[in-house]
Structure formats: C-alpha cells, structure tokens
Length: 355
Image (tube, helix red, strand yellow):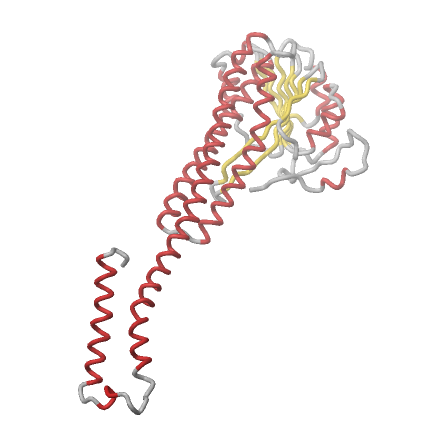
C-alpha cells in the first residue's frame, strides 16, 4: 500500500502558506475540467487555464471545477487567486499527507477526504487525497491522479438530469461527492473481509510463517483505514449540524445519512480488527498445539525406550560373573522380554488415549 507523503523535510523552516507538493507525482499532466449547470443548462469542457473561470463565478449556476494533478503548484496558486482561497488552504491541498478535516473560512468550506481504491493486480489498497472547496455558487475538487475517482456516477447524473442534483446547489453536489467516497469504503471493507475469511481458513488448516506475515500486513491495513476514516466522523458531524451558512438547512438530513454510513464503516473496521486479533491468537494456539503434539510423540517414544535402554545397558556391562551371559537362551529371552515391555507400554498409552 502506498502511504504517506515524501519530501516533507523540504518544508522545514519555510513560512506558512508556501506551496510545495508533498507526495507522489501520480499524474504527468494536470487536467482542469469544468461542469457548469442548473436545472435547464449544462456546459462541460476542459480548460487550459483557470482565467476563463472568472466570468463564470457569479453566474446563477453551479460551477464545478475539478483539478487532477497537484504537482503543478502554480496552477493551484492560480485557483487560489481566482476563488480567493486562503494560502493555508492551498498549502494543505498540495500536502497529500493530511488527515480528513473540515475548516470554515467564512466564504468557503475546506474539506479533506481520503479516496481509497482496491488494486486487484497487486492485491492491496491505494489511497488518494481529495480536497473540496465549497463556496456559495462553486465547488472546487483537487485530486492527485487523473481519471481514477468514484465521481463518474455523479457526472452521469448531472449529464442526464436525473434525480435532484440539477435542481440543487453546490452543497448538494458536495454531499453527492462525499457520499460516493464514503460508499466506496464499503467495497474496500468487503474485499478485506474476504481476505480475512480466507486467512482464517489458512490459520486453522495450514498455519505457517507466510500466514503470520499476511496477518501483520492486514493489521497494518486496518490501522491505516482507521486513521484515514476515523476523523471523517467529526467532519460529517460538523456538516450535518449545519453550523455553516453555506450548507442549506434542507441538506442536514442528507449529511446525517452519510454520518450513519460513516459510523457503520468505523464499526466494521473495529470488528475486523477484533477478528484479526482473534486470528492471531488462533495462529499462536495452532503453532503451540503442533509443538505440543510433536513433543508428546517424542516423549512417548523416549518413555518406551527408557526401560529397554536400561536393560540393554545392564547386559552391556560384560562383567565376568553375570549368569545370564553364558545361558544358551539368554539373548532371545532378553529380546522377547524387551519386546513385551515395549508392547505393554504401547497398549497402556493407547488405552489412556495418550497415543
């Protein structure tokens, strides 16, 4: 799994608001896409620069600007100039190591979320930071990578005019995007649940070092998910309480629904973490039981051979005055006696169910 930011030391000592991209460069080219709509009007296009948006900001329509690629800090800085974004907001946008959070700057809300994908080819989770700036007539979204988000169903609903999204404002659009991100977490948890079930069967049937490694990898995945999603509860809680004038009162019920989904996701993560802890305990118990079984067999074998070794040792001393040494039937008699002792002990262990 690709995690935290790189080159974070590059910001040490610099003034607040300095724009330095911290993270992976996931897209070579920066793409700026525009969707402008109201109930009767829709315009969608790609922009080569943000100056063209100046004429659209105050129009009676919802303007959604999506920027894919954060490494071109001059484009992010231009977006801040066009939409009057605070320098600290721009700094947080290009720093992809942020935790989910909500900041109210009065004229706009700044929201940071984590968008997660399940990489089927590498069988791991990839993460991408998504930043939203919600204004009275606009919504800005900033993503790390081009063409790899969960927003396509939202775009299709806007294009087709289905539902209420074309009749609502940017607060409803922001809700739709946040809801899409939160719902995608269920798919991630479903994949992890399947991996945990498979791992549980392997622990019971074939406990090995590779199983232990998989357990620790999954535990790290769950810790990362918890760190990425747990702060989201507070973000959605603040949105559904309606403390900002940018969120219409009618939207509270929608954000409350997203809050419920977030709580379910957090509870599922905690349940999966408990299951993983239980699987680790089962693994340790299985290994201990296997060792005990091996030691039990070795102990029984050693116990059987102890009297036989004693007899063999006594008759191997070769003293001159040992009457059995010159007896014609002494050798086969001792062998038969040792065989009887060994078989008797085996029968005794079987009756006691120690064997």
